[in-house]
Each structure stands twice: as structure tokens, then as C-alpha cells.
Length: 329
Ligand SMILES: Cc1ncc(COP(=O)(O)O)c(C=O)c1O
Image 1 (cartoon, rainbow, N blue to C red):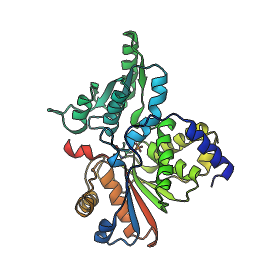
Image 2 (image 1 turned 120 degrees about the vertical axis):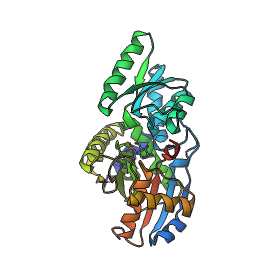
Image 3 (image 1 turned 135 degrees about the horizontal axis):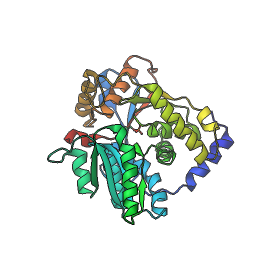
Image 4 (image 1 turned 90 degrees about the vertical axis):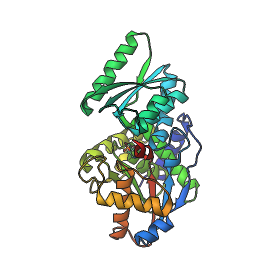
């Protein structure tokens, strides 16, 4: 637990960070009563609808970009460069955010362009992004550096947004989001969400710590093993400790929990559990989850609740991080 004094200091620091609001907040918190009943789950279940963020087709990246954009704009940049897979939610949200800030957007994507463009790739184009393709994930970061050098040589002022906007600044979006949830009157015992590059987990964990919420946060991995995601989360937490002016006390007060038991054969590949979860969400609540991230997180939610790793009287929040555009890929 953080001391009251440190928590107060961190919250004061959080309020000083510029935030470029994209969309309307708070996002709704809805009960998942039918879903819970159909799944035979005794816990009180709720969903935080970040899939319904009213900007750029929503999702967790929008919250992060709200805290990443101001320093880019202040630096005088005219072009945002970022990277991801062909159907990256992050790339789509960054292309939308750049447009909203009057900036150009150039993206480095690994994979093959869909013909005709579909899903996120279609939206990237509509938002006006320019593209270049690389054949592997590892080639993305050097390609972004090369693109930045090229643009600078042309007299442009590029700024790179790293993969997933999973920087300490980006994670501030989820530190603030915990405050938003508490203002809506919900104090869950457990928060379950989809994770990958670690920014959402770091923000949610730090948000609980600085807002004095004693909740467990479980990140259900979309791809990497727990040790890799936890290393990323811890590194972002260290940066967040600096930004929030409480140093290493933040990271040392936090227990990071990442579970990769629901990945199945690989990133984006459905599993029997993710299919059951997606069907239940859609048919019981008319809420859509995607097979790369949120269906697997929903499968994790079901498993944790059914297996009684979570007490029957617990209040559990599924933090929906978006990803629904992938259904149209
Ligand atoms: C829909 C969705 N959920 C969850 C995540 C994981 O978030 P993070 O990269 O912050 O761990 C992502 C991004 O990769 C995503 O697009």
C-alpha cells in the first residue's frame, strides 16, 4: 500500500499532466447480470465499456493517446509515426488521434496489406495515414527511425509513438481511468482485462495504488508469457513513479499479475474458450469481443470466476479494452 502522503502527491501530479480529451467520458459501467447467470457465475459482474469510447472506434489506445499527444503537439511536431500489425487497433487509434490534432500520420506495419482494405486497415486509410510495410515485428522500430530521418531530411518534424503507446505518459490514461470508475461509484475487488504491451496493466495497477483502491488487477495476455509482460509492466511502473513524483515507492507497492493460460495456439487464433466467451457476451449482453484480445480476456474472466479462484461474493469488473473493429478484418 502507498502511504496517504505519497498517494496525495501522486494524484496532485496526475492532475497537472495535460490531457487532450478524445471522446466523451465517463465510459459506461454496465452490469453483466445475464452473462453471469448464463455462465453460472455467482460473483457480481460489471463491464467498463472502453469499447464504447466515442472517438476513433474507441478502445484502450484512445485513453493512452490523450496523455501522449500533448507533448507531441507542444514539441512542434507535424507528423506522428507509429507501428503495429496490419490490423492494429493502436495504429488505427493513433491515425485518428493525429487527425484530431491536425497532424499527419505515417505508420510502419508488419504483414500484408488486405485487398481491398478491411477493418482497422480500412480506417487507417480513411483517417489519412500513409503506410510502409515490413516483413517482421523486429523490423518495425528501425523502420520507424528510418522514416523519421527521411522526414527530417525533407524538412518535416516527426515524432515517434512507440508500439501500443505503452509509455509511462500513455499509462497515465489508465491511472486517471481508475479515478473515473471510482467517481461512477464502483469499487471492484478484481479487475480483469486484456494485456499485451503492458501500458494498460501498468496504468490500472498504478491507478488503484494512488486512488487507494485495494483491488487485484489480472492481465490476460494476448500473446507473450507472463515474465515478458510483467517486465514491461514493471518498467512502465518505474517511469510512472517518476512522472507521479513518488519514485520507486509506486512500483514496490504493486503486485503485477499476468496470466497467459488463455492464449491458445497463438495471437489472434480463437480457442474453444474464447469462442464460448465471445458467444456468451454477444448473446447475453449484445457486447462484442474480439479473438485477439478481449475474447481471451473474457475467457479468463469466466475461468477465474467459475473455478472460484475469486470469492463468490466478490465484485468483478471486466475492463473492455475494445478491439471490435477486428471482426470486420
Ligand atoms: C483491444 C485491445 N485490448 C488490449 C490490448 C493490450 O493493451 P496493452 O498493449 O496496453 O497491454 C490491446 C493492444 O494491444 C488492444 O488492442
